[in-house]
Length: 373
Image (cartoon, rainbow, N blue to C red; front, side, top):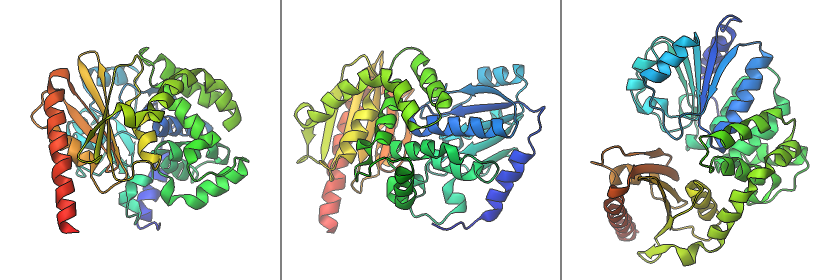
């Protein structure tokens, strides 16, 4: 990877340096593994730079659609600067209108959209300053670590950058960084990094987000990471969330038997009825296990009157594009993510139509691939 736009990085550094002690900062982050590691690193880095952090929020997950209520809350707290982490703020151009009164820095690695934004908004994504062929693998936690290192010493937080990379399955372009990191922390290397101690921490962070307790466990997990000085401390503090992983592991072990199989196993669909939100944990682990290299993995779970979807694929399908196509025309539905990993949410009554569209889409894609071979 090469830096092809140093001016963008220099501008980021200047923007951070321009934040005065009297300014008030708000940070919004996605409470998945990548976003949670990102916010802890950014919070500690800004504190070391004596910046005033007035608000940290995980009220947005997987998407960022800001409204008047949030804006009013920001104005009441007299927020001057906003950071967003691992949230595709640029997917919705209306967000820019709501953010017009704040200096906003968007740190993210999702697909780039709506590049024409107001001057008060600074967007930094890997595709804007690197030559990476797959910029989505430069996850937000690694971005925060690399960027803030230019301003303050956060070498002691490297364990969080490693955890974020593994959590978002972004390790394929960071082999040297990860191998050196695991050696530094005396963690034995395994090709399947989810089986390392760092992998266990990613599972515990994800498990915390599975509790349906109005984000209480999510906040507790984030605080545990903030209070920890190293990987070992974080594992001890977060072990209470492991109860979720036992349920997840059972589904992973028996995934093939419990899933619906379509088109000669090109598509596997698992439908859940559990008290925990565990779709992404299962889909990620199954997809990256190596057992289904040519399969589109989809996990669906009912949450009140909605269905939440997590899709993963190591094949040549574009999970993000497929899910967006399959929810077209649905009211109060959304989809987004990356090529190999995406998610969606819809009303319960739309799920059967979505499922039929998905089966048809994967079947048609498979036929086209076979025809072009």
